[in-house]
Length: 185
Ligand code: FES
Image 1 (cartoon, rainbow, N blue to C red):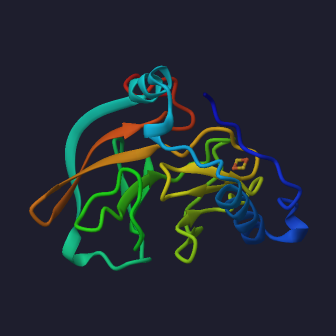
Image 2: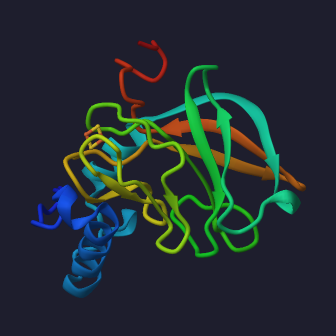
């Protein structure tokens, strides 16, 4: 089973990206089109796992210092790869911490590499809309596309908690502009 973003007609800039975000989310919630890893066939899960690359663990923050809805930025696995670390306040796929709500994602749009810095919407736990073509990503569901032109989920930074420390230990998905996670650009 594969998933495809559903193109609604609300992603026109004249209608506002945030409204588009809600339209897609509302559609998914209402239509039951949500896909979880558990619901995917074995081959699809294997394909997703194949996209995960492990990198040396790097400490990127402390649980006790994170405030819900206030993201921090960090570079990983390379100095020029910018990511967001955020406590969503809602349980998330791949989330860590006592509420499983702390996640991290790359901030380059998977469509054409648009910069997503500063676009986090705490109310919807979403990143976007991208300033180029308005794609918005759901951070509670592994960076799945909510609306817009991108077809790939946002690369998720794999996290581990050791005591109060949060470590980045890998990347799930291919960062825009890279031919492979290991080989670099
Ligand atoms: S580059 Fe982000 S939607 Fe096109």
